[in-house]
Length: 119
Image (cartoon, rainbow, N blue to C red; front, side):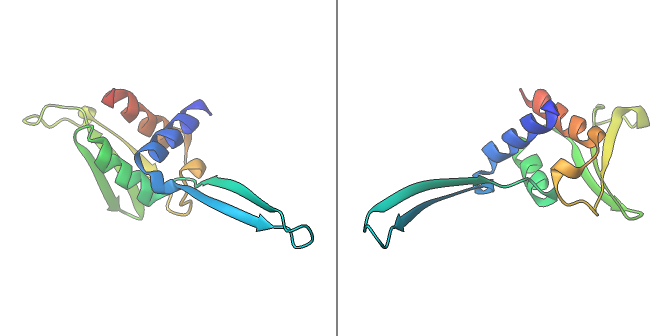
């Protein structure tokens, strides 16, 4: 899914702690030669990472709600002085699945649309 890849890349750019980097030096005990490896391991974004990314993204009125055992992310598209249910769009994060990659297509598309909103 292209949206998931772009969204994951965007979140990792904003949260560099999601990319583990290390230098490993291995010394061969028989030859004494040392080998250096650069290790980069990208971590998959989880719910806490997405929430932190949303605060960095600053795309407007995003609300996070927890009710009835559901965790929702809602965006208000309407004017501040106007209340209309049609102005809201939102998605539910399945709490049994902590990783972004395991969430619904609708949630990933919604979050991906926030990248386009910011640009």
